[in-house]
Length: 527
Image (cartoon, rainbow, N blue to C red; front, top):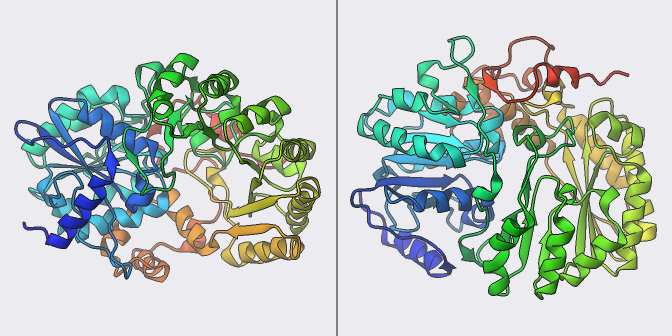
């Protein structure tokens, strides 16, 4: 299958602006297309994509090339081809999707269809093996089941030694997925490998993170984080916020040693790039202060992800300023102490205000705050209280203040997986209330669409009907996706409503590794 020359030229242009890409001969190797179902600008900001790309290309028996959702100037998708060799997706015997966010699920079907590959697994006799992993898939792989030959649940590092040969066997013998089904963490939907059918799937995770350096391997300015060198400091979180998917699927907490972090950061330091330190709860990492001190002593710049307000003090912010930081990000999530305690975000209002005072004292240029609306038991007064906290921060911090507001979305494999989601009209009203309370304050407010959030909730807690809807969707607008779901009998109001504790859930066959009944014990919002 020939690829139009303009697409080849575009891919080569992107490749020419990178450093670190791996181009291998295909001879004697298993070609794997690593697909991030979003544009390059977003996908190359994913540390997970860079890590899997690096690990696969370290193997002599594999050639891994990257594929992204490609759009033309009118926003219309073009044929997906690999960056490294500019081959069509259908040339690859293995297609591996890395899916971090549920709203990228439609793009899984879209990319397959744009490549001329049947989106439904049942129609792919003789076609490539399609597997998916990533945070969203680990939480609940069932919505994508009709599109996939297999899903990987968990962290892939320690599974690659058995996963790669199993993929090669499946690619050599189409429709024979038995070897894949034996790999720890792999779910094969066609074999009905679920709770009802017998076998369960246990989430896998890497033990000693120092064995697996996780840092940027490709340098490109054509991405969200530009010339930043990302380094993972820790994985997992002990906080247990009841709404948080990452806080549950990446347990237990594992931290890299300071020496391992510094070794992973060294290429960025040596090349004068900003070192971006990443972790689900970065300020809980015991070695963060030491890492920052060492980077500052090397004359390096460093950037950090979101910080807990109760860890923001003069010592930490002084280090951040010396490392070149101009802003901090804090996620109060809710507007009052009661609601924060209920969701597991153990922060007091005083912690948030103190962090603003510290930021002002050290001359930071910006604070970013993250809130949610529609949390269980939330009232209009809680929304007004969130706005009041923003105004109190504004009175203590004189420079740029940005507030991001998202809708609460119940996620599979979290204690709030049984909670209902507020209807879009309620969420829209609360957003208007929040914005009205802050009118004229000089605060920049950014919010997400509640109607897209409702679709995300359906994808997060959905079943096979989601994948069937995506395979048959007439297009990728919100209204077209809603119609496709309706055609499959998915009632959005019912699917986003509360679930009954104890009723079967589509993802019950996943053994997350959490203590028995842990999620149920933390599910209640009463008391």
